[in-house]
Image (cartoon, rainbow, N blue to C red):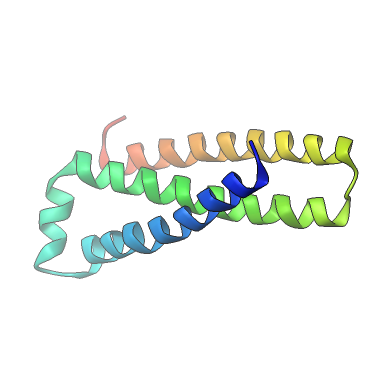
Length: 106
């Protein structure tokens, strides 16, 4: 994937972090809206999944860009990209397990 498309996704995830983060804050702190959001378990889990994926992509992409700047070798760039992708997927799976356990779906 071209670097410009990756950075576009990076910016989109920043917006998603704000939106899903606000929904998460309302769900856990607002006494009126919170029970409505948490009452719909599938909406809450979907929101948390998008929030988790956005935060992980945004953070790991930032780390990937910094590492590529430190080591501008083409071979290392591919290795860094694949390593960050693998670590990101494993982290997402662990986070989803935690989310599903917390709402009682597992």
